[in-house]
Image (cartoon, rainbow, N blue to C red):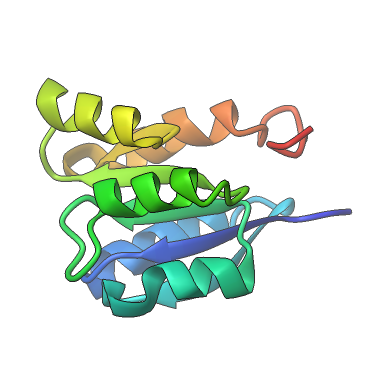
Length: 130
């Protein structure tokens, strides 16, 4: 079985832990790394080539919107999920315009994860690129 690989980037350790534990519940997903600072975020994406990047919108040194834009501009095959504390249409629009595929709302993290993951093929067991 091919795993959908995920890189989790958030400066809050507790948020990373919740996301990683949630993803770990699905046998076809695998967290391949965690990052606490965005200084080398794009280099990590280039090196690890994750299928999905979950990144904080306010990530230090390379926020989620910048990361989505750079990944799109470099045509990297990584879906970007931007995580935000702000359930605000402006943030959502900016992230999607930059190339993010989904938005996670941290204020309702469990519900957001449950909503997002079926859209990435967990329920059907499909790989997001297929």
